Amino acid sequence: MIKRSLFLVTFAASLLLWLGVAVAEEAFFETEALNTGLGVAPERVDRSTPRATVETLFRLGALGDWEAAAHVLDLSALPPGLQAEQGAELARKLKSVLDRKIIIDWSQIVDRPDALDARASSRAATSGMARKSLRLWEFDLGPVPSSIRINRIAADGGEPVWVFSERTVENILPLYAEFGPTRFEQWLPKSLRKDAFWGLMWWEFIGLPLLISAAVAVGLAVRSGVRAVRRKATARLSKKIIQAASTPLIVAAITTVIWWGAANLFVFSGRINVLVSPLVAVGFVTALLMLILNTLEQVLDALVGFEDIDLTTRQEAQNREMATKVAALRRVLALAIFLIGAGIVFSTANIFEWLGLSILASAGAIPLILGFAAQKVLANIMASLQISLNQSAKVGDRVVFKDHLCHVERINFTYVQLRDWDGTRLVVPVEEFANETFENWTLKEPEMLRILKFKLLPDVDLEALREAHREVIGSLDPEELDDTQKAKVVVTGQDVFGIDVWFYVPCADPNTSWDVACQAREALVDHMNRIARQTKTPIFPEATPAEAA
Image 1 (cartoon, rainbow, N blue to C red):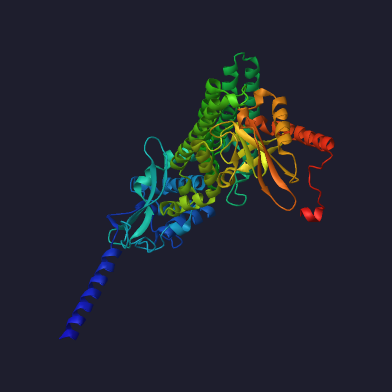
Image 2: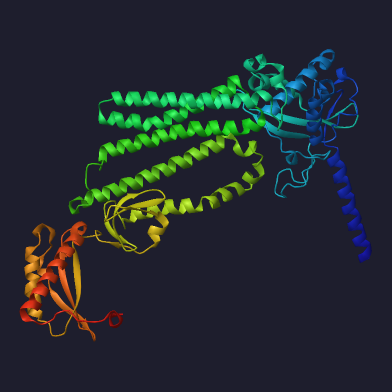
């Protein structure tokens, strides 16, 4: 009984599966007639699968056999008497548009009669379904995009075939007018309009360098014009705004020439257009966002500019904090503008679709790849924002980083610029600067205590040293000193060589404390030598290098 039940279940499942396949294979549009004006399709016309139909158009087009290529179009909108004549011309124009606007990724065109995509995810809406209509590509044409679509049609009970849809055929002429060869290209000699290699025509190898040269020439002319206008400007803010607009105007001028030339003079093939179209979008968006960002920076400089202020002095603590916050605001604005620009470019230029990366983009792989590639840059950007927000190091602060006594000059997106005490600059990646331990002599209170450490003999006269220390403190510039009550002499330790004596020098400004400490050390050594001569008693221990080690 159980075996009989299992047999019935298996038989029913097999029957349902067979019926499902049979139904799937019957997915097509029915029509009374298809391209009766063309006659019977020759054997060289293969319309059995979507890929075969597209391949037939390009294969016969390369041979110039447009009469046969017309069979891959649904010419139902044309009277039968005009189908043979106009069908060949429409096939030629469709191939021309596809050549100029796309690079075909053949792996993305299904090669099954039922157009069932076996690679589709189980969660996809069309998973496991036979299809009778496929959208291959889409072009911006007027207010409404135009789709290139192929349908599976069975005429008068015949075998179903795949052809470019009737709606697509109706849009061929508008598409050709928009993306086909320009009037200038049609004036070129036929020898230049022939195919060369790599899917390009001879004129493209000449036209592209000419267009780039013209764009560069216009960019140089715009740069000269902007410089002339800037020289004539008298107001400081006007000069800054003109300077801020200089680079965006140059980028916009170059992009405009390339865009106009590619649209009106040279309609390039898909292999070139796939790069030109996104680059034009990137150029315009970059120019606009650079103009906004540069203008905001110049306005901020004019409102809270610190160019004429020495931020390293102790009196400029508030300005140091303000300068660091302004720098953080600039980075936030720059990052936000960059993200907005990237979103605009990716959404308007259809970069993933043109490059055949739509599957990767939809699966989220492209963001992961870009994120991994930009991991180091993003880490530096976030570290710079962290430093600016927590104020651990401000512009103008005096810091000791890896034994370098420096001032913080700039906190940029990816690096911190430090000015060493001898005037040299250290360029440190922001992430490294944020992860390393460093001394900030200006943090919280600018006053600091410098300690001069000496190794002296145990029988040294400490009172004489304290008197000498008081004289040294009294000889220093009072403006450079903090509360002199903090000046003292203490013994902090001893060993076989002698005692450790520390001399405290209270300094008011960390920027000058190192110089003040050097002066105090020099004066103390001079006083100690004088005491040693007067008492005829040595002060410093005598030890050989080996003993000292």
